Image (cartoon, rainbow over all chains, first blue to last red; front, side):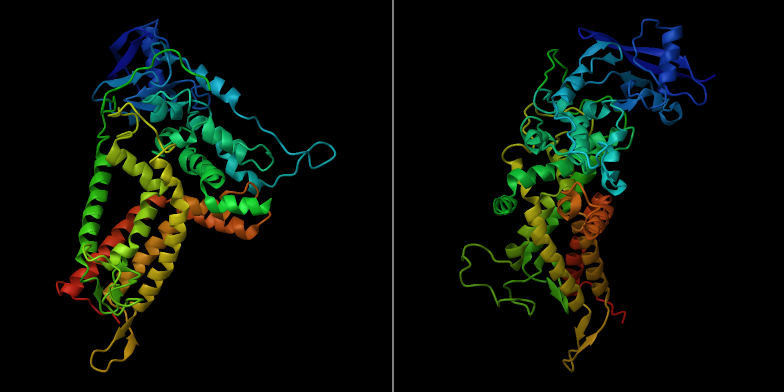
Length: 246
Length: 267
C-alpha cells in the first residue's frame, strides 16, 4: 500500500509544533480517514472534532495545506501527496488542542443578531402565504452548515482579530437570510452598519471560495446587504426620496 | 459584541502553509491593471490619433471639446487653463475610470493585488492596522451607483459611436454609405462587452429588484433582476474582457490613424 506523510499540528493554546506521521493510504480515502488512522495507530491522544463524515455537520473544519477545508470532503486523490500534507486547526479561533479549536464566539455573535420577525399571519389559522419565487433567493443561504470556514479565512477576523466589531461572513449570510426574507419585518440595516461592521468587509471573496456548500456569500449576501446600507446611509438621492415618501 | 480573550496568533507578510503558487493570481492582476493604467495614461495625454475615418476611440468618446468632426461643442474651450495640457479625454475619462475603480469586483481584486489586504486568501498581511470600507478614504466606494448612472449614459454614447462606425464617407464623392470594417467590428464588440459589464453591475442588480424582498408582485422587475443576475454571475469575466476590449479599441484606432495598420473593409 502506498504511504503519505501528514504533517499535523500538535499542541494547545500555549505551545505546539508540527509532527510528521507516515500513513498507509488507499483508494477513496479522505483526509479525515487518514487522521483517524493516525489517531488509531500512532497518536491515540490526537484531538480532532468530527461527526457526520458527509460534509453536512461542519465539525471537521481545519486547514489542509494552508486552505480552510472540511477534512471529510478533502479527497486524498485531489491532494498532492509527493510532499507532506499539512493539517492544522483554524487560525481564527482559540486553540483547544491539536486540531480542535473553540468556536463558541460564533454562537455568542448569533445571539446578538436580531431574530426572524415575521409579519402578522395571512390566514386566520396563523399561517402565511409565500410564493416560491420570493424565497428562492434566501434558500441558498439556508444551506449553511456552520462549519465556520468562511470565518476562518476572512482576513478581518483572521489577520486583524476584529472579533469585537465584525460578525464575519457567516453571520452576514445569516443576516441576509433574515433581512431578505419575504415575511420578515425587522430592519437590520442600521445594525449591519454600526455593530455588525459590514463596512470592514473588503469583498475579497475568500469566504465564497472556501464555502463547502458553494454559497455565493459575497455576491449574493454581503454585497446586496452593503447596497442596502448605501440606500439608507450613503445615497443622498434616496434620502431625499425617503423624506418625500414620508 | 462578543470578544475573544485568548490572544490569537498573527502571521507575517506572505506567511502561509499554502504550497501552491498563491502569489500568481494577485501578480497577474497587478500586471494586468498596471499595463492598462500605464497605457491609458499614455494614450489620454497624446490627444491625437484617436479618430480614424468614422471611428472614434472609446477613451475620447464623447468628445465634448476637440479638434475633430466628432466634437460636440467645438474646439478646445477658451476657459481651459494655459498651463494644463489639454486632451479631450481629460473631460470624460474620470467617469468610466471611477466606475471601474469603485466596482465591487475590481475593489476586491486591487485590494489584494495592490494593497496586499490580504495578498491572497489565508496568507499573512504586511500591516496590522485596518479600516476597511467603513471609514475614509474607502467609504467613498459607496458612490459606485452614481458612477453606474453615468456609465449607463456612456453605453448609449458608445453604442452611437459603434453605429456611426458603420457609415463610411467616400473621399471622392463625399457621399456616406453603409459599410463594415474591422474597426466597426472592434467597436461593436467593445460596446457589447462594456454593456455586459455595466448591466451585470452589483448596484444595478440591487436597484432593479435586489432591494425588494418580494418580486413576485412585479413580474417585469423580477425579469430584469434575473437578467442582471445572469450577467452578474460572470461579472469578473466581463470586467476583464471589457477592460481589454476598450484598450484594444483605442490601440486599433490609434494604429490605423498613424498608418501603421490598415483598416480592412469587409463590406
